[in-house]
Image (cartoon, rainbow, N blue to C red):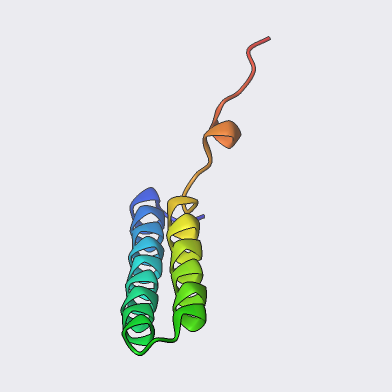
Length: 70
């Protein structure tokens, strides 16, 4: 079993990586929008939002941590 500190840091690394990917999509979208390619820019923005959503979902889920008392 992994140590909690290593698990936490790997989750943080995954979040940071996804946030970085999102930022790259946003920058590419800006370039496309400035070039007038709004459809492509919109798709890149959606990809960036998807990365942000996945970054927020990383780590332990609250529902999995709550146990019903008998």
